[in-house]
Length: 135
Image 1 (cartoon, helix red, strand yellow):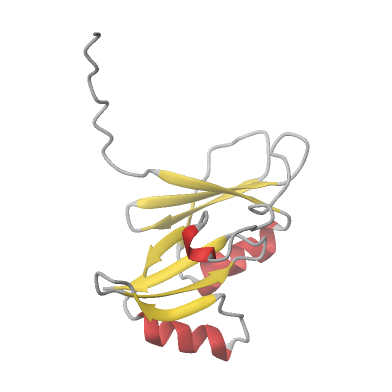
Image 2: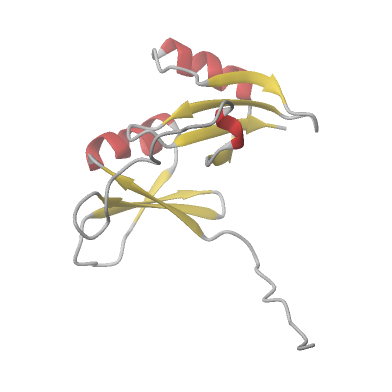
């Protein structure tokens, strides 16, 4: 049997979402979530980069090369068990109140995870499920 050596991944560098409207996406990740917009290399296609702690969110514009935006239709019963992106915030309860005050629908929560953190879920402008939690 051939011996396998692990790659020793160090962490998540970035996630990428495909956007139908870069301005709406910027407002969500920069305005609502408070990420920092980062300089982006001079790619030949439109997009945005945001910094969240040690992780970046890269955004490309929907089209022939990037494909359609959004995660596709959710067919399960419990959205939190499907594909989502999780971000830690200082106070999830306060964040949920702020989201409600902006009339942004909360998909699920807030409720405590079995290991303690409080979590809730919203969708970005293109339907990506976003978990916000605090320890």
